[in-house]
Amino acid sequence: MALADRLLRIDLSTQNIESEKIPESWLERFIGGKGLSARYLYRELEPGIDPLGPENVLLFMLGPLTGKTPGESRHAIVTKSPLTGTFLDSYTGGSVPESLDRALSDHLGVLITGTSPDPVTLRIEDDDATIESATDLWGGTVTETCSAFDHPTACIGPAGERLVRYATIASDGGDHHAARGGVGAVMGSKNLKAVVADGEESGQGTATAEAEARYRSTDIGNWQATSETVETIDFANEVGVLPTRGWQEGSFEGADNIGIESIREAAVGRERPDAAVSGGFRVESDEGETVPRGATSISLGAGLGIDDFDAVAVLGSACDDLGIDLISAGNAIAWTIRAAEDGLLVRDIEFGDVESARGLLDEIAHRSSPLGDVLAEGIDRAVRKYGGDELIPTVKGMDLPTYDPRRSPSMSLAYATSDRGACHRRARPVLEEVFATEEWSDRRRAAAVVAEQNLRSFLWCLVVDDFAGEALWKDGDQEWLRVLGIERSRDELLRIGERVWTLTRLFNVREGLSREDDALPSALKNPVCDGSNEGTRIDSAEFDRLLSVYYDIRDWDARGRPIASLLSRLDLNDVVDRQTPVGND
Image 1 (cartoon, rainbow, N blue to C red):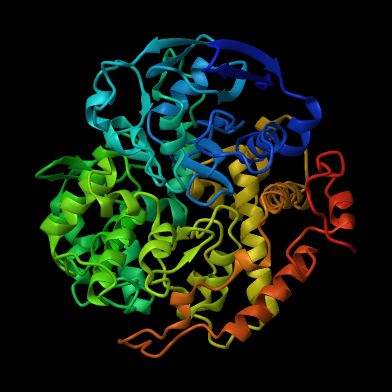
Image 2 (image 1 turned 90 degrees about the vertical axis):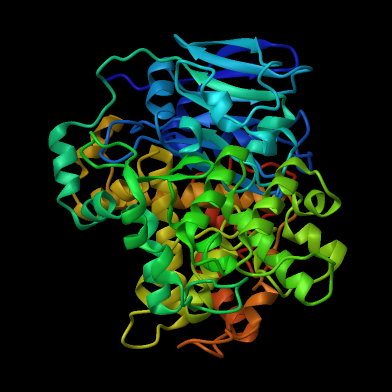
């Protein structure tokens, strides 16, 4: 099977559309998805450009395995983050990836630059694109925008239009989101309301029934089919790493009311009921149907002290329709509550107050109040105005999600070294460390983080479902990789992941990031207030030592810069420009 080897380039300022050949050496070294996008981003952008300016690029990128393996088809959206100023890759599923794959049979993705003078929609069809007016859609919610088209659509809501720095790109009426880091704000800055993937049904590009059945028989496949990620809150609460009431506590007494069993009881069905591996649970709320994920109950439930799942569903549905990252939105509200308690600002809001939380979501998404406008810029920018940097943990400007790492030093390292800011998907060593019968050494912790970061970087080059990719990798059978048309050992494949992780680090170093940006958040230096982990915190000196071990394993210097011999080993010498600081051997 011939692999796509072209890229569709679209300049919204000039409305020029061109198809270009992807350099063969780039395909060999970076594959697609995250890797190829990182290579383009590194070449296209000058350091220091405004992420919300016309110079920034927005890539909708596929991979050679999009739609060809079990699980959910996915695509990558890559840009320079307006929230963190770093490399940003965000992934989403639903109906758009396969339709985009069919619409771009000869192309691996779309690179968008410039800014349209008026709101527009981009329609992708038959390996080409057309630019259409979207003036009548501007101001619409995610649900309203998606319903305006007969084909799978990725769009922004009011938050993206108003350049909220953690706005999402949503699809399937808000069931799916490329969420973290503000890809929706970049799309809004380009006056791009929607991307319509007008791909014809072909019967190709989907996993075989045999492959689906094989995946479902694995532990991961069975877990995804029965629980999806909504079981995360039950796990986090059980082991004491559930961020509760603005990261003050590690467990939540109301967790059962917003956990997996409560969600199953509330569900009206599954997102993909006819699929071999069903999608997430669908639930009804006062603001419409929503598909809750693990982060919904954590960030909008435990994080805000809300133990009523119906209320959590209302807040989640609101985030979906406004097109705003519910993790960052939940953390912003939690920060506001704690800042008000400490007298840093005046606001009548408290933990457990659903109505006030719902109102603040609107203020953030529409920037309709002075406080909402500040919170729309992210917690770090709010801290610069009001103070309170010790309240909610952030890394590189992005607030932490899901797991409180104060019981797991390896997880704190994973957050601190993530290339896009705090992210639990780059590496999740907490899942093993909290159950370890003996304390991990610094080297084991650092090595676990490095290994997971490299593997996931490789899988994201293929753009394979996260869970299916991990299951297939553990299975050890590389038959599913032969779609690449080349034979490579597992070590060679992991080297691709290491190469891509190093490239995104080079991008961030060129933007001015260094060891100080991999620092331990101030909030994690404070002890957990209650529960089985009461008093637990991360020691700064111990973390600094752990970070040095991580750098040593990575072949980065003491300032966090990849060294010259590493670039030679990973075949990156021709990539690095003179503006990128490189470490000495």
